Length: 48
View 1 (cartoon, rainbow, N blue to C red):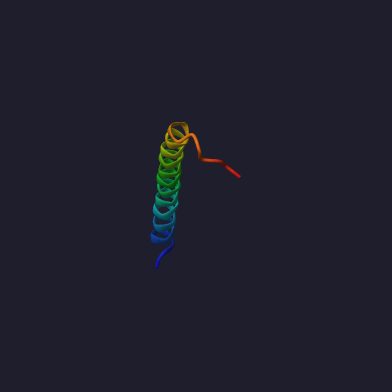
View 2: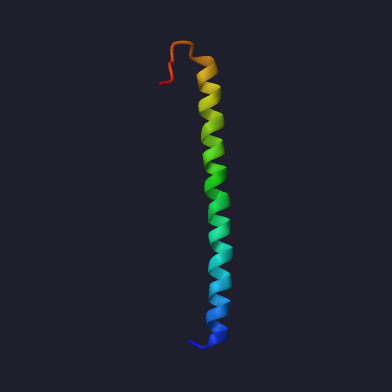
């Protein structure tokens, strides 16, 4: 590979890494919101 191709590939991978982290963060927040709502509805659930 040439230096230009290497730079382009690295920039692409960095942008995809950022998108993946944002997507994972979104999934985690959705799960936490769903579990938080469930915790309010079920009175006998204890968190340890």
